[in-house]
Amino acid sequence: MPGLSTAHSVVEPSALSKRIAQGIVILYALLTMIPLAWILLTGFKTPPDSISYPPKLVFQPSLEGYCNLFTTRSRQTPEYIAGLPPAEGMCDEIARSRNMVVAGPSKFVPRFVNSLVIAFTSTLLAVGLGTLAAYGFSRFRVPLADDLLFFILSTRMMPPIAVAIPIYLMYRELGLSDTKLGMILLYTAVNVSLAVWLLKGFIDEIPREYEEAAMIDGYTRLQAFRKVVLPQAATGIAATAIFCLIFAWNEYAFAVLLTSGEAQTTPPFIPFIIGEGGQDWPAVAAATTLFVIPIFVFTILLRKHLLRGITFGAVRK
View 1 (cartoon, rainbow, N blue to C red):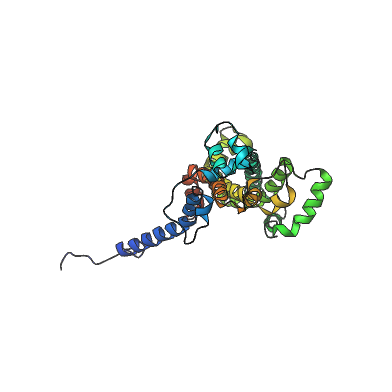
View 2 (cartoon, rainbow, N blue to C red; view 1 turned 90 degrees about the vertical axis):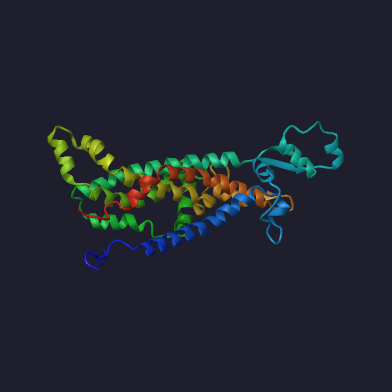
């Protein structure tokens, strides 16, 4: 028909392809959320319901898993329990219903606090040092820069178990075993390489003319870095912080080998949550749910920076 254009863009996807892509993304998101939803539900089950077969999708919610996570219990005779004063709280009532009494708080809270201190402090140090190093590699002529960058990256190529024994022996001699300082230094050293490589790419995309204009106006190099480069690289810094935090938060191998008491983090503590007669799966699920929350909240708060940081520099003008 006259006036009817049949031209179409080879870049803009069609309506059908958009719907198919949206369906695939939604399906993938639902599949990845099933394990998290199952862990969340298991935390509100009783121990018998958590191991029932076939698995129960409809059950009577219970906080027994969370009570078992935050308390330690001991089994007593019915006569001893009958002679005790009335239960002081819900956890005490649940324990007595299973012929047990609450002996005291568990070690979950101290281990959780250790994870917060070690992970966030090491992430802050790694991102800070990585930003300075990446700026130096991006803006200055560093001798053997390519070789140095490859050496920095090579520290991420080795599996942790390959260097675990030497680090353990070194930490034992230096008195850093089972200390927060030792774990912070170790995670910082491991994450710096990732931070340098990610941030160098982000800083390379920031035009040098911005800094040159600032220094012409009287700014020093440090002032130009602080007031011009850092705001422009905020998206990359946020994305790098998320990746560094995920590693430090979930790291297991070094935490098992180098900590056992005062500095132990949550990942090696969760598998040893033992209940009466075997593994207390509701308590394990409750601990896993609480363990996921900080990293989930941190990622949600920085999600806009994360999406912008991943695509930063993808389109060059």
